[in-house]
Image 1 (cartoon, rainbow, N blue to C red):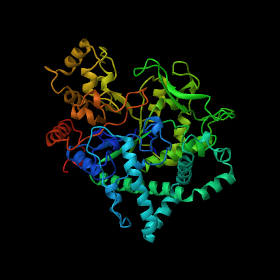
Image 2 (tube, rainbow, N blue to C red):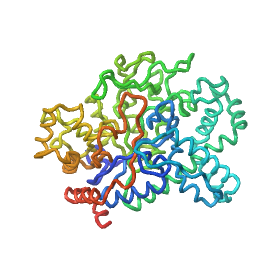
Image 3 (cartoon, rainbow, N blue to C red):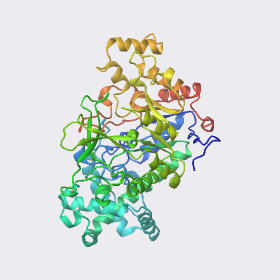
Length: 523
């Protein structure tokens, strides 16, 4: 439970002075066209340990939707795992897998081809389900049923997935009316009709979480902690909105949102970002916090905390107030601020879960009320070095202004790479000269490592560096361009790019700037 000092104020969650790397599972190198929970993940954990890195930060781990650009922030489930992460290498070594799967035809490209990965992986996963059904030992079957009983969300998700396959769309508003409206008889009838398909999707989740927990245990043994990511919003075309009537605010006649989520114009976009997600029914008609929505959020938080060691809540400011954009608007310019659930929701979470290991993503338009919510909960916020150099020495992203209780990044998945930012169109020559002068460099050689060193030197408890920045990669290897729907999330590592030299530099910086916790110094 959360601890309080004598004055009644909550004691901040403590993170030992340390460092981490931001790299999504898809971005791991791998023989099957995409990173997985297989050998490449274990090798990456070994590298982190050798480099004196304590934290591995990931993007959301849920399934992705081809129609939404394979974005991990637009998943059809807030609870399920992405089957693309399942390691074929590990899967085919299961004792019940008696046949050989088709060999992978992939090389080791810099970018994931999600369509090719799906064409390869789908037959292998279906073969695995067939093999499990025929050959699994009673103990394995019992473990799957225990998993099914513990994960109270999984049957609804599996039915949703089977229905999406049947109707060839996960837009449940296009399904037959009885099942679209979840009429009791229709739900039972479709569960029976699609029984094997439902079981298949449950099986995929069982395998995913089995492999996930094995990897987490290995990382823990190496002293590596995982940082997960919760997108604040869900998609309309997903299991959560369909299975939980009343969770989001939809028009009673059309079933579509009246208003959708987004943010007003900011650093990333002159027209704001129109995300298009439905908005939560945070409050009842009398203005009280909606207990049904709060209970769903508590279940969601508890689920992710069981999988990772620290949770980054994306768009934290939306819990204080959120930007509501009329559904018929094509940009996010015209919108209005609505009151969020505020402190009451997090107090309920803490009462149910205990101390919340949370990083608050507090970027964008941050008001004193948002800061009060974050600080009252003692959540560390985020600071971004790329936002620091506006020629204002009071800028609170500058290294000399960084406070201890925060997580400092050179950039996030939404930013350009450090080299892409510095050498590209985002900076003019005057600002480049200012950056060089600030960091006290005589040349721009290895600019990316100079900025990483600046980050390591700050008082921030935790420093997280995107893998591309450590490797000095340019703009072509950035992960995401906010406001664009396609062509993102594809970048991946190739081969052994984290050379002994790079690992040695990271470890030495960790030693010099005291970012290797004492328990890890001997490893």
